[in-house]
Structures are given as C-alpha cells and as structure tokens.
Image 1 (cartoon, rainbow, N blue to C red):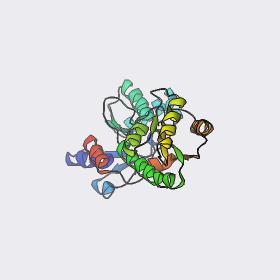
Image 2: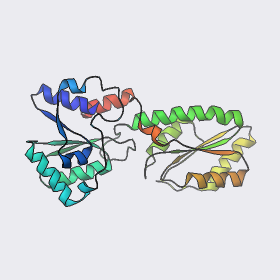
Image 3: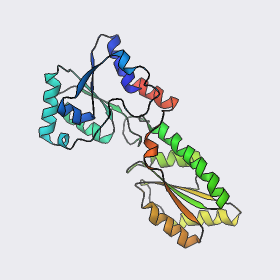
Image 4: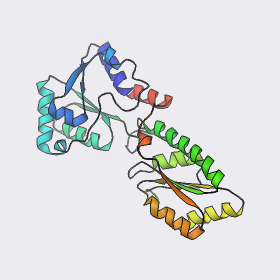
Length: 251
C-alpha cells in the first residue's frame, strides 16, 4: 500500500518513480525499473512487498554504500524513499549523511522505531497472533494445558504486549521488563486452584528462552505445558484495514 501510494502521488505530480528490487542489494547491482500507475494496481491487499527485499552485507561497508550512491546518480535519481525498519533506516541515514536526499517510511512488524506510534505491518501481525491465541485457547481448554506462545519482535515487546492484552493472556513476558518465574507460576497455580482449565503465557522472543521458561513452569507446577513458536506466519497475510490506511497515508 505504501509503494502504491508513492507511485500514484508522484505520477499525479508528473514525477517519475523508479522501483529498486531487493533493497540495498538491488541498489548496488542497479536492479531498477520504472514504475507506472498500472504497476501498482491490485496490490493494496497484498502482504510483503512487490519489490522484494534482501539483506546486503556489502551495503554495510563504505565501499558498498559508494557503489549504491553512484548507481543513484548514474540513473538520474534525485531522491530515495526507503520503506523498512532499523537496518533499512541505518542505510538510509548513511546515504543522507553522504548528501543524498533520503526519506524513511517506517515499515516493520516489530513497531520498534521512534517518531511514530505505529509502523506498517504491526497491526496486521498483532491480529494474526490474536487469531492464533484464540485457536490455541480452544485446545488449551479442552486438554487442560498451559500454553507458552513465543512471538516475534527481536528486542522489543510491542507484539507480545498488544497481542497478549487483546488475547487475554495470563502473563506477558517482554524484554523491556524483567520477570520472576515464581510470579508467573503463582498466577497459573491460583487460576488452576479456582478451577481455571488453562493458561496462556505470551513471550516476546527477546525476553528469554521459551523452551527453558516452559520447562521451569512444568517443574514448578507439574501441569501439562506446551510450547508454540508462531515464527514467520506472523510476517505474511493480507494487511488489516488499519495497516492499509497507515501505509497509504505514509506513502
């Protein structure tokens, strides 16, 4: 949706838009193509990016950055729009410091960038996780189990916090705050003693080893504990209406 908005707005004002495939790797290799309005038709409902993306170790070095900058000048490009997260923005910052006009559009499911309340993709990911929690809760209740669910976010707990609150988790473990496993276990035990048939614990990937956390819970409660690592299912799917609007406005 962000790419669509950029291309349509630029073309409306008579500005040519060039798409760079595979991020900074494509920038170094000169993998450029002109984008017309027709190229971005029927993509607003798609996840991911039609331009694809890739990590570029070469661009992390000054020589690679100079290659990319040379390709921008060679192709007559007057400004660069970078849609991405922390790594993408570090590269954008380097180009800006080298004197090239660069704009950053915050797109990362982790929501871990400053200067914006939300990043593109975060809302869609949270809804995906909540849907998974709803499904896991059904089997957790049926089998009277404790489920420990690991979600993405690197060193940020935004996905875990938002999905855990919306999904009604008993405990939410995030890297920004330490946790006491005894407190987590105490909540589970109190709920079990009151007749609660299941417990859901949401863990951000940067908060600790989810397998070790589950073993500790099992050892301390003697309950049936299962682990679900949601993984890359969180990174795909059709974007929510909120994300489509956010991306369109930012674009």
